[in-house]
Image 1: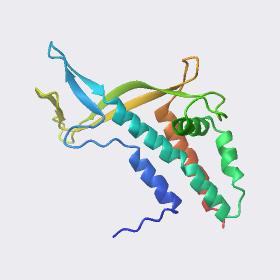
Image 2 (image 1 turned 90 degrees about the horizontal axis):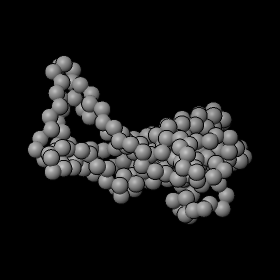
Image 3 (image 1 turned 180 degrees about the vertical axis):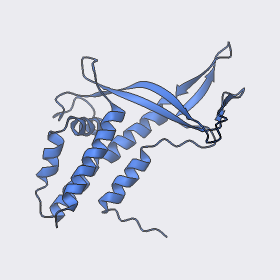
Image 4 (image 1 turned 180 degrees about the horizontal axis):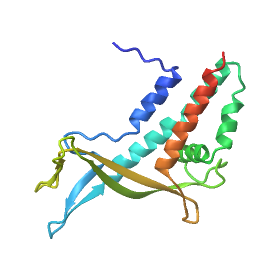
Length: 194
């Protein structure tokens, strides 16, 4: 039996990085389905409800690191405000916290860290086929629209973060990557303190 140490901040961050990947089982993703039109053309349609649930779950888990880091700072005898200062000095962390607060409380936010109420919108989907080591790479699309390859395939769903004027501020994948990096830096800084 594995005992989960909920206070182990490094394990929490590692779990978070793992959770940010999209699982695919038996060639099917719960987040995307194949669609065939009358002419037989196959396209891919994101399943928005499961996709939005995944996105907001990941945003929430990442934003909740703030409270764990504040607790760690307190345990180290450091003012918890150091975590708030890091957030307030980083646009990506501000956007992350705002998106999480919007999910919890709705809009408009009483106090926005980023200076506006960010709007999350579906942006794009891409698929990358990674070849096999044998060099005999192929892609097959069967009659039901399922794809099989000799290599692995990676789906990437992208959301844009927009301001109230409809201007793209950032891509969610970039914000998440930057936030994971920033939280890692803070964990490293706090870990050095005895």
